[in-house]
Amino acid sequence: MRHLVSRRSALTTLGTLGLAAVAGCASGSASSAMARSSVPGAPSPGGSGGSSGSPPAARNALGVNINSDAGTSDLADMAAVSAPWLRAFYPMGDADQGNVAGQPVISELLEARAKGYGAALSLMFPYAGQPIPAPGSTAMAAARRRLTAVLDAVMGKVDILVVGNEPFIECRAQDRDSTAINVFYETLAKRVISYRSQHGATSTTSLYMGALNHLDEPAWRTAATERWMSFVRATPGLDGTDMHPHLATPAAGQDYIDYVVPRLRPDQTFLATEFSLVLLFKAHLGDTAPGQFTGRYGLPAGTPVWQVLGDAFKSPFSQQKWNDFLDMSPWFASHREFLYNQVTKFRATGRLAVAFYGLSQGKSMAARPFGPQSTPWILNSLFCPYTIQKQANGQPGETIAWVNEFRALQ
Image (cartoon, rainbow, N blue to C red; front, side):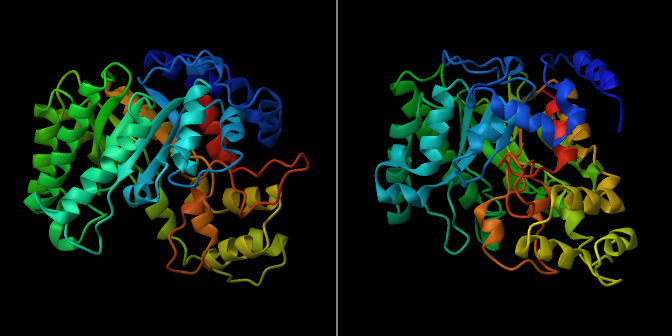
């Protein structure tokens, strides 16, 4: 791992200051305990937010992502790593339940915003099992009704609103490169822009389109993604677009940057509300776990990686055992600086608004057995409540490599 002094120099060169939390990086989970003992729910000085409710700057920032898993410890976990921004997505069908502002994900974002954190919300329209709604259809009317209900709850109250979550995944395969997907999201974006203007929220809520996936694969760079970016560039009310670089190799992250940035207007920026090496890790689930690890912990020689991870779900490891497993696995240890390197690449463009990294293992990760074909999202998170035993102070275990990298980037 590089020395933190060189990191500070590199980040300063990129115009990102506020590294007050760096000094705690080397102390691992102990530094989390110290951070948690401070006032939870208040951003660090480096985050530019504060109890007054003034938002942190959306420029070269790094926050945390909770997807749709709101949790009671999220704000404490954010304080532990000095995270100034919180991002979540909201499945739009949930608006039919009423009281959008009182639902867990929305209420957590609003609470975080009231405590001075930056709040970003992605609107998820899942149509993987049905056609994308066409203008004038009953399904489009339902989508617009849900959209209005959510806008009533969050417009002017969150700092960033993203029209879409993963549109090109959350649709049928035959709709992925069709005009239907563009027409649907363009229609919704125009509605959001109009609503924001009518409610005087232009200066408080920035609007993005999101998010583009698999841009490192030529088959996913289509006429529909070209039209997507053309619409973003041509629409004055939009601040940019979102990307989700879930990667099979660290180098593939550059493909996302190379596709998105040249297609933005000079005044626009991009988000990366999710990013990870999850596809690289998945490719190693069938590997044999390191002999040094299996010998130390009494596992049979030849135990596969996926079984070790499955065992961690069934009977959470100690922090030391989790550390040893990752440190002894070359496929992880050789990429332990991915978070730092990828955010540095984002910042080097001069066009990053906010990137978001996974805060904690979600409930959905523990809801099904972990097997050889599972997607190992559990390896991406800063905090690991489902695979690591609680610390002596009651706090969740950490993937220390990611926690240290995250703090160093603040």
